[in-house]
Image (tube, rainbow, N blue to C red):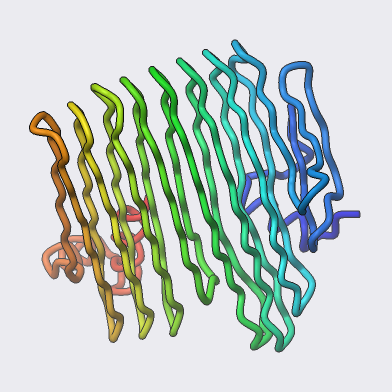
Length: 306
């Protein structure tokens, strides 16, 4: 049974205001509570460890899979292992994410390990949102691990978003690209108070004409701390670009460590990183339009993370 709190969490992390169309698996407090499969997308419970297998048939087009996780139980540590097989020439959207509601004094934690194989010519968009809320002193902790292999002519597009309320997160993303495979990553993160966030992304471009684009944007407020380590490794003729931009405020600390390594003379790899505060002229311009300083600041940050 989904409570009003559960439904609010689902709306935050998966944009779900009702039961979704298509395939879905909703996990609550360490247990699967609702599931649906389709003719082209099957979801099977693992027998050796907690988690599910999601199998998408070849040539499946314009279908989606929702696999949100919600935690509303104080003191729970939930670990799940999900495996995805995206069939050849398919085009699918996978919406994941985790929302934690913690009103207690003990921590609530979700560690999710997601492994993907994107088959030849397939296109997968993967959206992962993290959100925390609750008036208790217990920490809300999220530690996702994402492992992806993209076969020849395949495409993987990732949107990884930390909305608010997560006290501690350690993100680990590992991707291998084969011939003519593409990766597009957009990461957006907000931290405040004394929250901590670390994101490690490693991409291996192993096939000819593979390409990767990673864009990371973050805002660190109050005394929060962020660390980004973005690593591209080019083993053949390939192209890769990293762009990491952060706005730092108050007493926060941000470390951005882009790394590129070429093992082949035809590997073209670029990295950019910038950390700075909100430009004063931007604030002044918006304030001349009638906004208060805080309203102007919030407008700029919303646009930056949007």
